[in-house]
Image 1 (cartoon, rainbow, N blue to C red):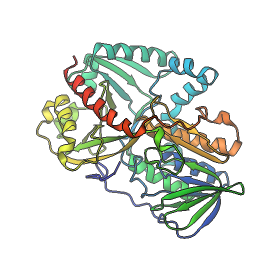
Image 2: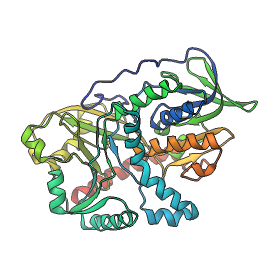
Image 3: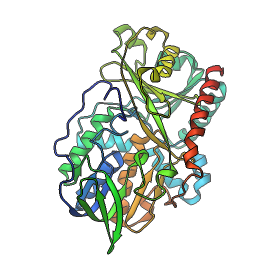
Image 4: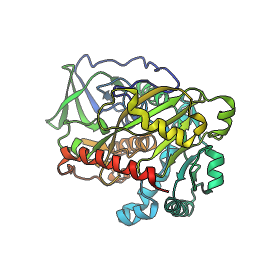
Length: 426
């Protein structure tokens, strides 16, 4: 995530994907895809391999949005457990539960099949509980997923301490289906194989306007060139603007901040995350962390709602780092970065088809690596077959959040309040 970031990847410089650049001339294709993140590139890959002509456009460069610099955690499931999904979605519930269970497999399977040059560690994800209430919820989550065959385990306080090396947890939950990747390498490799499959990719090209004319969509862009297409996929998520009326106002954009330490000394590296699992905690304003391939500790969490102006805006993460790992009190922070994430009020991704030939997807909910990879595949299958059952979520109308302009003020106040509660909660 890179909006004004203080650094790129925590351990590597940007990989240059050859073949991108602004859209120089107008084109006519079967598919226009707006947004070169995981969802857009995976959809482009599958559609191009099925013989469709595809043009991808993005206002930034590959990896400059959340797909390049997110937390790198590949976590299956959704914010809701299976029984809640079954109750809420009725007959569509089983398909949605199966989809939620498969999202991490979509990422790791694609990397393996395609031989992508992406560092991967698939040793699981720990959801660490900081209260007995959180531990009871973890116990229930473990019951529901294990009853469906998932490789999960409830952890004691001693087991969490041994696996994380961190202070302050009363237990937790391990989901072995999960893991970590280098997110910048992943999105760059997706762009490479999509281009090799025949998809054209233009960066530095913002979509300004969509117009429906003679059963075709015309995308007006910032370069003056147009893309005429039979189908359009809008996969801009937290970077959505006025392109699709009302879409941006269905999301609450939040800033997610991350810091990366200097490489850990050998003794500390053997004690901190020795199994290299990903970790998220159970606090209201959670922190998440993992180790990078070169042995740095990367820790992230929610930041201020406005654009950060100095290293002081990351101090809340440095305090969390010292709370979890007192032995790291004097370690230097070598990289700081932030980016925008899109959250929906119901904490579920939304799929919209406001007009014929137009699909928009929004709302990663903090699990975008697996979720958006799997959704890109599903959207491609849906376009190719015309079968709505290929989509894991029912299509829904665009419903802007009432008083959206004031929603961020309320969210910012809630974050401050929740952070205060977290500080005193036992």
